[in-house]
Length: 215
Image (tube, rainbow, N blue to C red):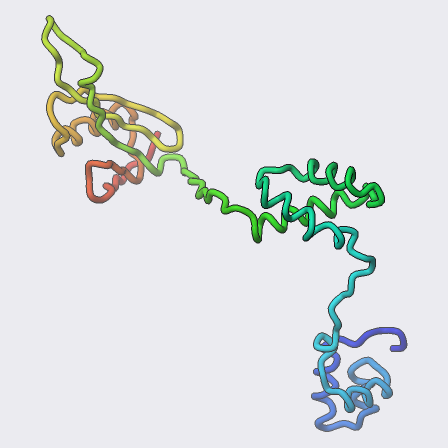
């Protein structure tokens, strides 16, 4: 139809129909004019392959100051806020329109993402209810606990649920042994009234698994 651009699908249909039909019949079946069919015959590229990159519709308002003034500011002071850059550029160049603020902020964000200082990478953990329990031992010698004047050499077994924050502590008289871990964990699960699906401890080489569910 006049005034409408053909699509890649229409052109593929036309090329398929042309294997058996004349240009005018193939064009009619594809939904465009015979003249368009003859243009396709002369240039068989798909419409999507003919599109030109969109050109800038207006001059870049930061072209004269970006590389010479703004980038040096950002390199000299990595923490400089975009609003401070905007105010300084406005002071130096009153002829620049105040309407460039959003453009400047976007350009600064892009520059920092590509060329700015490296940022800390954070992998946030998401815990599910009843999935993970954690065990650890804490030496208590520095607390100076005494019973009847005698120093108590002990540790605390500490159990915690990752999601809810439920905690249980158990006094261990001795070292970090498997027996101490088993005893402390048993008492913690009794107090909890259930068991998480997975249990991890810094004192073990691999996590343990329990078939119960957290209550």
